[in-house]
Length: 111
Length: 122
Image (cartoon, rainbow over all chains, first blue to last red; front, side, top):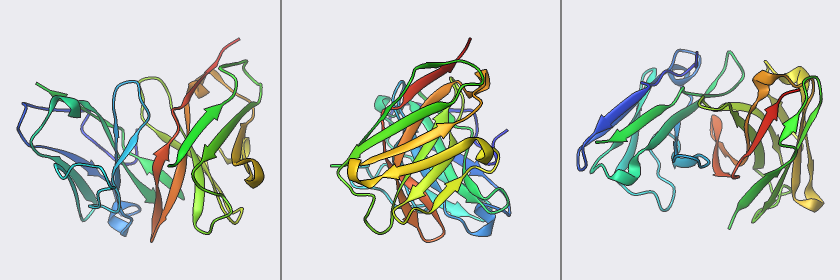
């Protein structure tokens, strides 16, 4: 059971928009700790996608965007492409557990 | 260009101690603000943060694993070493090291190694 809750799977057709939620609590996201997102393509290491809730590292397409509100955060992907098929993880910090915490991951399927 | 690579045994026996080395390039662990962390991922499961070491030798551990973990750095060799004692089959996972970027109220991992699969079995 992950501290940050993500839907196990989401799907969308090419060109569509999908969102992935990341729900936390008052000891992590709700406490003001920022959320970071990673993309993990099959058989590869995670790659930083979004940092500090909504910032994109250099090289990440602007089709990817992040937001945070209250005890939750969201990753949005617009103009879905086949190459976006991957697992996505959110990460934050939990003051009660005193450690970085990850969500359980969301598998994105491009139909 | 920042790169990291993990090395160590692929198979360990239960109760043994695991020693993993992260060799990196493109940054120095003597530079203010820099850190290197370890994260693991059991097959088909989620990521789990294990430990972190900063340029000033500040060390952080996952509280649930703290008694079993030790993280050290060798700045001259550009290496970070993680040891985990009393290995168990549930510790079977891919272990990643990653460059850690401090954020105002937390941190994140902006460059990752390719990972190394460690299997615990007799």
